Length: 464
Image 1 (cartoon, rainbow, N blue to C red):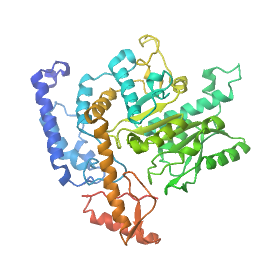
Image 2 (image 1 turned 30 degrees about the vertical axis):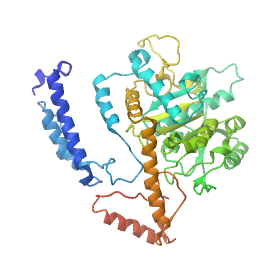
Image 3 (image 1 turned 180 degrees about the vertical axis):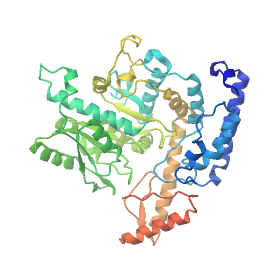
């Protein structure tokens, strides 16, 4: 294809069909043989770059040539998170509707700067976020719903991005509380106040994205040692946090925000959420619950009580659609009890933006709820996944994963060689050799890696 003949906006239907066929053939071939491929990438550092270091080609290449490059030079360098033998890190579940939706989203090619830039994107996002609350068995009057006109949900790239937004907003909220009686400080002035005395609290089992978000917000971090709770796993309690807060107040520090875990990365542990009833009000702090992996479990009826507990105590909470919810990466769901807590931090305007009607249920300016101005049409992907599987299909997917983990847990319990480290009840299984000899356990992990036959399996990921 010569560059002077190429116009991406004047593709004929035949050209488009041929192009899509090329891509679909590549995807089909890849998925057909995925199970026979090594899970881990089979390259040394720099090997991929060496194939592309010659720079931009002078003349354009056909899609057939590009697909051949992908097949030869990129796919062997991929660690296959969708591989049936991938059990490391955390799940990264995608699905047919998630894949197909991306082709449609790319074809539409909109940038959702604001409601008027793509009304379909904003309004569908409001709908699917309220649908997710339906799945999470939220009360109809929940303040986290868009229909409440109080709070709502917004799609983020990752849980780490959601946590960063929360920590920055919690910092400003702390300054608002401190200076609410002051008549001399404007909201703009509050942005520049010294935050060095503000403190965030979280378990030492919290994923590193939590501390990272605290650093971005410019506040202090107090990590609390997780205890073995009555549920057999590791977490923290309200009493622990109160004790730490009291010590900090005696040192002239100001508690600002508590981040709790529902399904920690290390062991799928749950902090003692029930002990935090009324905590945000009594301690005058923001409570955020990170349910990045385990949040989808709330769509199962037996988890309704836990779902309601989380929503009762939280100022905000999040979970990922890309881990255990079949929506693919990137999709993370952030819910806020009061949207003003985000809008007072992230609102932005400019003469180049269109004026819109007063904000109603389905035309919130989501650019004012988080960091990015432009937004992809990810709501279409979420809608397609939820509509394709329905509540029953999603529940079946979760139950199957739990049944598989239960099978592994039963085998471990019956084993004379292995034992559980903590009690788990979802898809993560934590075990070790029946020995406290650290050297023996490390040797066992190395042997497992050797038995993986150069990355053909990716069975475990050492932790704790």
